[in-house]
Each structure stands twice: as structure tokens, then as C-alpha cells.
Length: 150
Length: 115
Image (cartoon, rainbow over all chains, first blue to last red; front, side, top):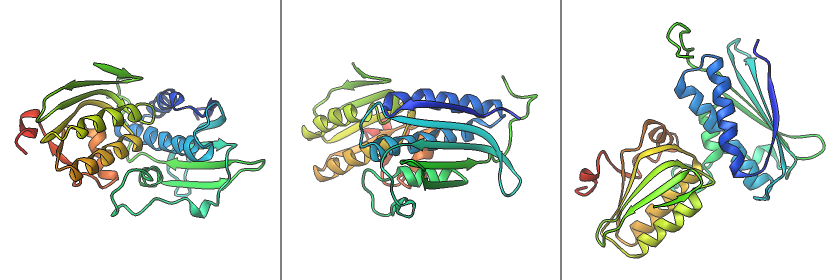
């Protein structure tokens, strides 16, 4: 099984493109189709954006740990698990939910995007402060290795 | 042409229908500067504001939020804001956030001038 990747970034928007690239590379190595790969990267980008904005109040340079690994869901399907650990503000996980989309206004879309894209997303207060978000996604199908370009 | 991080913004100015062509990524890093530029154009009260998304490779909720905010400003000022040719990834984001009907979307600049 492909080994997990763990690394730490600062709470800066400039860190996000490199995270997306790393995620996409991991998903492609797992033979994920491009659309699913992009969706995964978008969901993680939104989760990190929420950490930067709400967990750290837009203060840069604060630590965020990211872990990507292959996983097997409770349904026995192989997918990718992403864990995001921050050390910012702790909040009640029950208060984290997407807003009503019938009200069209800027902002508040990140959690909705995450829950739409990912198969599961679990928020929990982390020991020692901050929050941990664990997300899993399984692709609808894998790319046929004989047709994959890489 | 101005450039902010990985987004380039080219504005073809016109009193009636300025055209804003975006190339690159509209996200948390780039959307604040874009917002300022678009608000400035809306403040001139043109008849239309055309935003060409043909070359936008990536957009996040900050980018979508910026477009929603600008659309609301244009609606209040009776300016017709038209988005042009969003690519599959951006269209998908509009669908996930159920905004595909909220925005006026044209396939080409020519179509945007007639909608």
C-alpha cells in the first residue's frame, strides 16, 4: 500500500497551491480520474481556507499538519483519507455545517463544498488545542493503467 | 494588464460594456484584488460588465463569493453582469454551490454582448 505522506504548512494562502499539487500527485498515483482528483484537491483547499480564516483568524505562519493516506472505508471500498490538524480556535463540531444555499450571498460555502465532495468529513477538538478534520473520499472508478499517461 | 499572484486580469475598458478577461486562479490569494478591480468598474455604472472565465483554471469558494458579491452590486446598479465560457471545473463549482442559475452565463463574448 502506498505510504502515507505527512507534512506541515503555515496558515498562509500562498501555501495552498503546493498542497493541491501534492494531493493531485498522490491521487493520480492511486489511479484516480482527473475530475475526482480535482474535487479532492478543492475540498482540502476549502478545509485549509477555513482553518486559516476561522481557526487562526487570518493570522499567518501558524502550523497546520496535513496527512494523506490510502484508506478502506467501512463499506470496504478503497479511497483516500486526508487529516488536517490545526492548533487554532476550538469550536463545537456540531456548529460546523454548510449554510442554506437558498439564500444567495458571498461566504459560508466552504463547508458545503467539503460535504458535497467528500464521502465523509469528521471534525473533532484535538488534544492540546485546535481541531482535527478527517475526511475520506472514494473515486467512482479508477483509471485503467493501460490508458493512463503516467 | 495587472497581475496578482497567479491571476492575470486584462481589462478592455469601454463606457458601456467593459470586458474583464481572467487567466489563472481565482482563489483566497487573488480574489481580494479582483474584487477591488471589479467594484471599481461597477462604480462607473456601465450597461454591462463582461467577465471572461475562459482561461480560469481554478476557482474556490472565495472566488465564487467574490462573483456573487459583484453580481449583487451590479443588480443594485442595473448593470448586466455576464460571465463567459466558464470551464468544466468552474461550472462544476457553480453547480455544487447551486449558483449556475444565479449567474448569467454566455458561451462567447459576442453572445455576452446580446444577452
